[in-house]
Length: 267
Image (cartoon, rainbow, N blue to C red):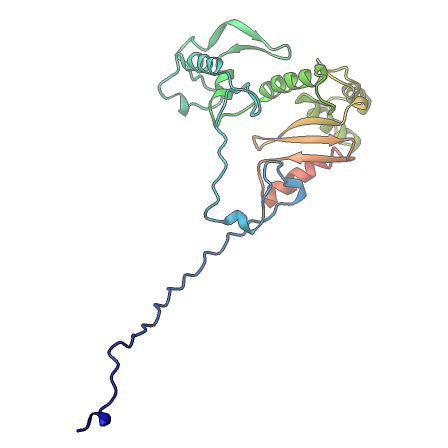
């Protein structure tokens, strides 16, 4: 057969292969975080958007520091170490199984030979320090009163800040609730007139050490223990904003309604 009748074959022709189709991956949907209401907003949480559920987002870890050192202060390692050495001396082997009212130390070792005088409270038992040193322990009125006394004292005598505030002791909440009950006809041990005078003394700064009268400050911080719940909340009466702010670590509807009913008595 003549060559011109044969099919033309180009041996240099390139063969183009189809590109491999990339496997489609369904993106992981972002977890929806419900934005809490203004009543429960914490100043330490700033992001509630859809990006908050990103799998690449890492939680912020706050490492435990000495109970008397704030997050912004420089940690004194020697004080921290000495405190823990002293706190762990003579502990029972299974001290962590003891409840709040039981002794966590060996017999006779919890009683302190030298009392700790914090002016608003005198401590003679080592178990008091155990509760602020170890996690998941109950904090009572004395712990809060001692803590708030030193915060109140620092706020009163410090000239480094233009922000003025004070705080109250745990007893103020009981006084106010008794006054509220008296005005609504619920019988109590004290009359309305006596309770009114007690509240006025708190406002003028006559009831506590290192106290400042309300007409010279911006905010008043009030610790409140919710009766029957073993839970503390913080109430802030803001004179500049003309409102009552509440800081609470529990966020659910049943608890929310209970707290609201309690706060209405302050309003």
